Length: 137
Image (cartoon, rainbow, N blue to C red; front, side, top):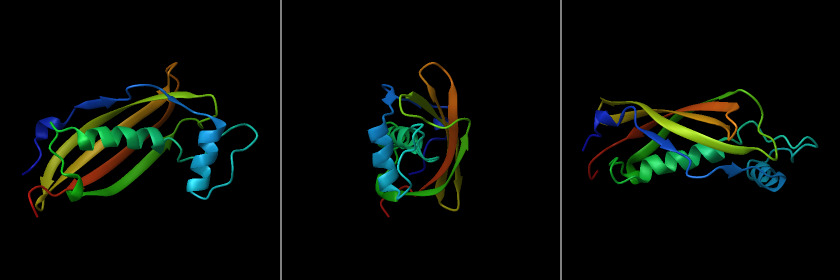
């Protein structure tokens, strides 16, 4: 079953701020085999994906959306960094479904996630496209 194009414009926000610590940065750096946290407590460039992925999870598991997780492929992602994430930051984000369109038997779901500090300082924007094949196949 195709997804409802009315999903476009829907938003998903972080339920609580994500507290960045040197420990969380070090754990992330180990997971991606990056250099450990530097003396300034700066996270690897891709660290905000922790917040963005949690929001993507909220989109994909919301029963009212109708996504079947087993039928999803992550097509692409792009991160536009405004400033680095640092230990001590408290991050919030909002994922917006920018569009849903059907093409060649699949749904293409374009999203944009804006991540900032709780004080409103922009950190990054991440855009992603998911490919969803509906039905029982």
